[in-house]
Amino acid sequence: MRNVDRAGRLFDALAETPDGLSLDQIIGTLKVPQRTAEQVLRVLRLLLGEGDDLFVVCDRDDDGIYRYRLMSAKAVVDAEWSQWTGTRTVDLESRLILFIAASKAAVAATDGRSKEGKIARIMERYMLRLAEDLAELDGRLFP
Image: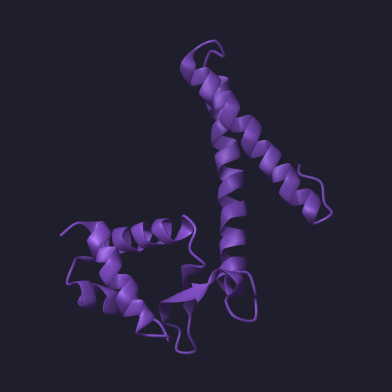
């Protein structure tokens, strides 16, 4: 079975379980190894991200167990409904800083006239712009 087909099965399982499923429950539902279950989650998120109003979030419940749930895209950005956006925002900003550091190293290590050098410079330029825009939203300067 292809992961896109499994994603459909996972969607149905999540739709039937408003409180969400743990990763172990997803593994059991799909009868696949953990790595495949994670890939199926990614496929489902990508499919839903192409225009659906639903998204799959993963929040920690009161017992400390992370549960995957289908959620309205509007609720995803509402902190009262989901921790996901705040957690992801912090995580993404942290990764962005690391990617900027890596792109700076790539710029220093490549010739700007080569394809690799051009790619490194484009990536650095756009990542720096994103970091600056995000910092500006918070009223701070990006270092």
